[in-house]
Length: 136
Ligand code: THU
Image (tube, rainbow, N blue to C red; front, side):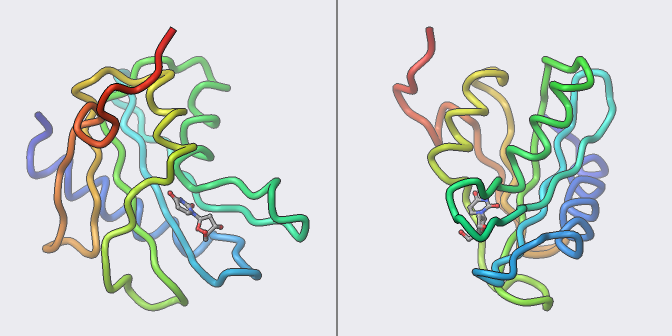
């Protein structure tokens, strides 16, 4: 399990990633910070598209950045999101597509930190958020 210091670092990084979100269609800005086994942290934001379906979620941006740099071992991700530029007012759980991408690369005890701010957050496990997930 992650220590409090690591959790706080991931929350800070996810919150600050929201400023890079490209979300002109939904105005819903999401930030993610993914901790790899190497200790390196990969950040991500959502990147929308006028044709809608090419939109990439913040979590997948972070996972794809990491995998494209040779990382395949992950410990935890922090996700934070909400409308507008202000601090989020609620939790932003990962969408089904991002959960499936996490299943591809992350172990069952992978920690998913849903954060509203530094004080308000909850920690889940991947196998809790995706029970009976499909893996080959
Ligand atoms: N979004 C994410 O970045 N992550 C999620 O898990 C949920 C949804 C983004 C996609 C889209 O740009 C916006 O939030 C509204 O759906």
